[in-house]
Length: 171
Image (cartoon, rainbow, N blue to C red):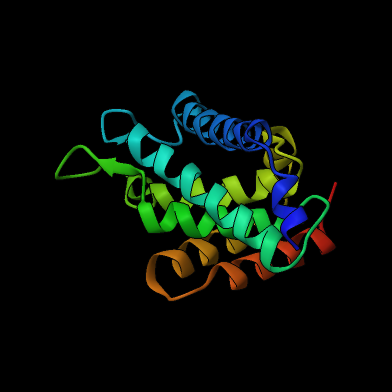
């Protein structure tokens, strides 16, 4: 059992942190470049992003130990854990008292969902954007944003949502 933990070297955890951080910040840049979010209305906290990634690495290590996982952790599980952490820490914050769009109010939910999709698709923002163009996506996305914003959920239930989505739709 201890052997599983010992296989996670500092280099392994460093690579995991870099991968998670790169995708989070890449999505933030994508949202600003595409106008999905307005930089005059919202900003992102880099210390909070770092906290999310650090917390994820702790969860990752515990998960591998608890369930004796010797290979990669399933993509939907990574997505569920990260989405739960993004929603817990809420790294995007409002800069103004009034918003011209409702997207700013749901910025963390949007980040979390698109992040989860990208993780499930091997960290590919391009493949995630392909899903965005599906005829059913807007309904699913809006319902998911509502769930994250208004309801209670667990990392496990989020994992199940992503696993189900990927079973039925993987390009």
